[in-house]
Length: 202
Image 1 (spheres, rainbow, N blue to C red):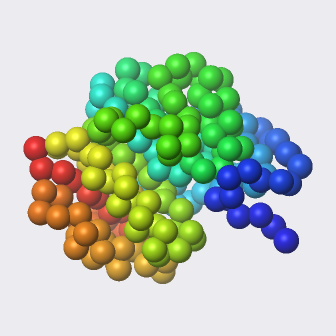
Image 2 (image 1 turned 45 degrees about the horizontal axis):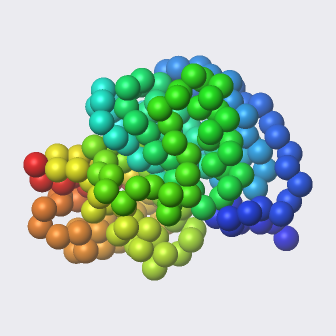
């Protein structure tokens, strides 16, 4: 039976692979492995997200929720070398790969950690995420309900969700749960995926 990418400690023997990928127009060579999300390629949803997001802020703090081997984290770090980037995942193998890839690319401002290792007082100027939809609706709502309220005033979260995986219902649930100081909207639809934006008032 294949393992879920959201298991904390994958038991399958490690099989590493080199990938050549393009992140927001930048060609890079990275390392990936089995038992992490989309371990053999840059997945379509993440590619669409990276094509649609605006430039991240030059400085401040960013978050990638569910980093996998790190494409979103690396794109943030490459775009803004002075931006402090936090990459979180429950999968220890994914975190190790993200940290290794950041080191390969000279991104010393990247922290790849488990969610409980993020200091409680940090707020995020930008969040980019291809969230782990397949953990289930309740777990997903709890995950996003933990991190989206930590947007700094004026901050934005950009999320990519499959149209057929509940993107529209997620948009409604976020609008209901986050409160008046947050705006939830759909930025665009591309290739069967919705790009949702959560913006916190200044």
